[in-house]
Length: 227
Image: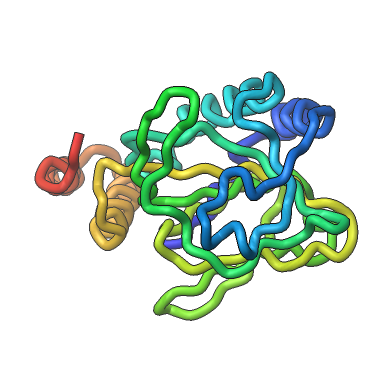
């Protein structure tokens, strides 16, 4: 399931986050790539342990923690500390790759299974040309270029790439989520049921039927969740 999380960062928070990362020192993005991905990765990243990265991480994690749509879709158990990248100039693309199944945080040694990948766009589409996030799976190919502050969630097992940036610079935040529900199909069923129940409650309040449907949701989650 591909899902857009609109306005994860509001305008003021986005501006603050961008000011932090734009003033930081960037390094070769291949430092966090696997052996296969490193062959097609050509971008810049903030070091995981630098002060700027830590400040920006806190901003993004706080926003994720307050976003109901993100929780409903991802059912997060663990979130890898967000990373930040820049595409532009000579370091402007990331070829086809699949994200590693398990990410290890260098500072703590903590392992996070990558069920979902997330890209938070920090640059507006008018600021750069190219730079589309292209995701390929059994349902076909989709090119995504969102407004600044929006986030895209997608399965980590999908083949994906970032097309070359031919003008300007593309700033983004990216991370991986270990879900309480491992299977994408089950998360989709839970997401559809939860959003349908919320819509019905908005129309008619807590009727006997919506209470029963809510019970169905939680019983499915009880069966499928790994906490």
